[in-house]
Amino acid sequence: MTTYVAANTGTPRESAAETWPQNMTLMLTNEPIVSMVDLQAWMRRSKPLLCQFTLPPPPDIQDATSNTHSYQKLFQYVTSKPFYTVAAWTLPSGKHCNNVIFVALNKIGLIGAFFPRTGIPEMPKPLPPGSSQVDISTRTPPMTPEQREAVLTQIKRRWDFQLQQFRFLKMRLHTARGKQQHRSGDVL
Image (cartoon, rainbow, N blue to C red; front, side):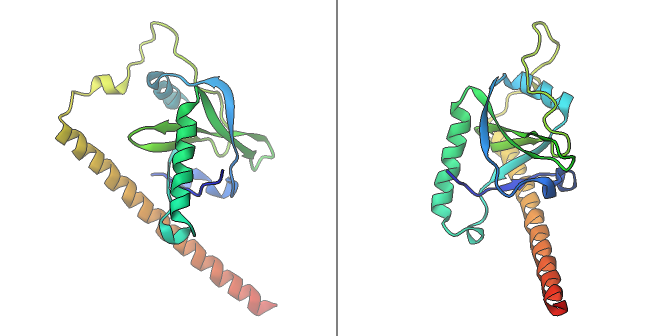
């Protein structure tokens, strides 16, 4: 199965996207998925670059309907397995290793926890019993449906803004590459 996605992050400079492969092959690990509390603790310790994977806009791909279906199947695949899904590639250092863990969150979508320069330092593990780590959701007061919708709308606006920035940078990069190719053609 193939699906085309866009990776969105609030910190594009740290993404080292130039080191990512054009195509990622996802693999299932033998590491069981941990609770959200344990995953949050792992993220605080390991500090991955987080990216949300979204569908690219229809003009960027030929068959948007088929791609949407493939993305839904990918999301289903990641959520249906009790183990983590990862992707590996060769780092600039020459080391070939797992560099991203995929996590599917029902309200947000598919998230990638990237380690683009070092590889995944360690897989998420359950916290020891009696650990003082507390789930962030237990610290927030209950919200009404309207409040929850307002928070989700605010998050979506942020993601939309970041997506617009990403598209603008992509367009500028594409334009710059076109000019560079044109200049190269003139030299030949």
